[in-house]
Length: 261
Length: 345
Image (tube, rainbow over all chains, first blue to last red):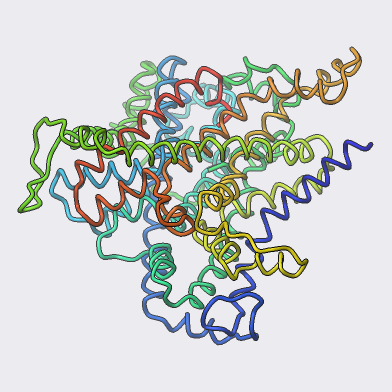
């Protein structure tokens, strides 16, 4: 099978392309040199301690976690409600709603950011903690919605009908039938929404005032060329810690296509 | 009848391809969910009491059963208010402010209707160049990712065993979700003048390349960043092609390549278009990568928008320029919908 050999060679090269940069950036965290240079000069671990003790990094990390938690909670509520509504709708109106619902992730991030910035400005609102959360909640909602809707589409209507026949009202059916069946999809959506919010930079630059989320701190440091060893360490931590929820989400969904944003 | 088939009944995609392998990935999962079905929710007694006994809610529940739209509306109300009041209103506000102006002295926004911003955009050819560069690189990145995604998607779905396949899936997902800035920064370190690439070239005795801070750098980095967004929908689309069709094609004497070109490629088109929505839109709306790996004079639409909002505080002008990617994407999405990409998104 000569053609299979060619395909596997191409696959190996493409995975190399995907992973070599990640490996390089992980290795840089252990470099002793205060400026990035290759090959690495010396091995050091003290940058990890320095970064941990940097108050700016800590504040940014805390803000990022808070924003991601709040945005994810809003996304779970809004995304699940929207998904439950959409699967009940007739196909014509369902098409419209599902087209509109994916806009926040189908339209470029600069548009979401620009639109929110001009919206807040036209209301005379100052940018704050809450405008960051509101911005993140828009695209996080879509992630949860996508996951839940995919699961609900695979659930037969007859189950909720049977529940109603047996005397359960809509809330009881939700609690005893629908929620257990879509729980893992909500969980996976929530994990992905959290990861996306935690990493977001383009929309955030438009909706943040004086606050720094962790990605904004990294962006600022790279642009100014300051604290680069700390950037390496922060990035090392983020790559390691985001791998966990992503792999967990994949297990929860158990479906290839759905983890795409 | 296979339970997974019943579950598929309401899925709008099933009218596209009636294939027995469509649900193959999810079947055991859904069975697992079934098995662990309606148990373990009894802990929430006070909530349950509130939800089941409250008379007005009970009335709403039965009303929503008799009149379907009541149920849909009461579920949709909160998301619709949020989505319409914030996101859609914001897109609308951007459209409106693009006709506003800014007071030169106070910097205040002046509402009204004026085409000043659009005239300024058309008068200066720089903005046309920037738009061309942005759209051109977005298109090049999309094509590159389609080419790179196919071998991976094909090997993952058709050649790999279940364990290898799960490993490959994880290997695609981890770079997709690991820090965006980290990956851009990694390329900045690789492509810079004394970076990893030139070091490696020197080691094997080749002259150094100077592609850091150029359009080439942006093309490579964007293709790298968004490749997983193409691999996943293409793999999902390849999986939906029934193997029997490929066998039939081979039985009829088609060579491997012509089976690919005449059977697989057209059938996986919705998946490729779904991936293209992501890669094109993500490139179109970026300004961070051009700032970090593009050089002087490699601005994207996003950079102009960003600096007009953040630096010069000319929101109306930025809004006017942002209308261009909005129109480009709206056109793209309408075409994509016709091609069935939304079911594959």
